[in-house]
Image 1: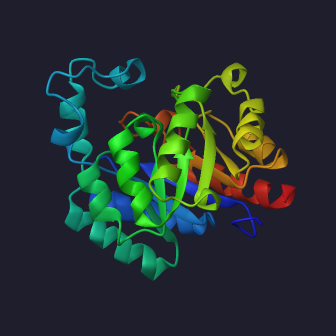
Image 2: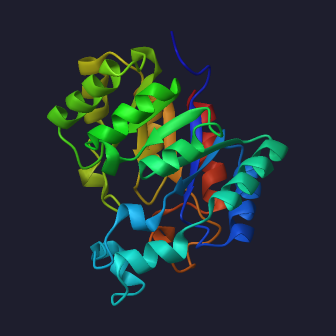
Length: 259
C-alpha cells in the first residue's frame, strides 16, 4: 500500500533563510505558491553539532573561506521559539512543516511539531540518534547520501529493533555533493534500495536542475526533496544548488504531469 496518494514534494528551505525569521516566513509563502506539499528547514544547536575549529566543506568555502564551520552554522541557526513561529505560520498557510534535526536535543524539540521525521545523510550512521527517533512513532524519511549499503542496512536494522514500523520508513536515494553532477546521480541506486529493503523510495535531489527529480518520479519515487531559495544570488552555502520559486513551480507541475 502506498503511503502517499500522490508524490510528496518537499521544498527544502534548509538554511536558505540565512538566519532571518522574516526570510524563513517568506520561504513558506513562496513554497505554498509553488504548491509544494511541505517545506523543510534544519534545526540544531551549533554547540551540539561541531567543534569551534571544524573546517567548512569545499562548496561552503566559496562565500567565506576564512570562516569556520562553527561560525557559519551559528549565524544560520534559528531559535526554538522562531521554529514555533514558523510551525504556526505553516499551519496558517496550510503547508506541512518539517525540519531535519541534527542532534537529539533538537529532535526532542521537534517531536510534537512534526508529522514526518527527516533523517539527514549525516545522521544515517548516528546509532544513538536513530534509536531515539525510532521511538517517536512517526513516518521517517531516511536520506542515504555519504553511505554504502552496509550503512543503510545497519540504520534500517537499528530503527526496526527499537520499534519503528517498516512501512513507516521511506528511503531517499541521495548524493551529498552540492551540487551533484548529473554523471554521479545513479538513479538505479534508488531501485536497488527498493529491492533490498522492500520499502517505499524517494529522491533527495542536489543537482542544479529539475530533470533528475522528474526521472526519479517516472522510476517510482514517492517522495521528492529539492533545495529551495528565494534567490540564487543570496550569500550562503546552499543557494547555488537550489531552485528559485519559478523553477520550483515548474518542477511541481512537471511531476504532476508525469503522474
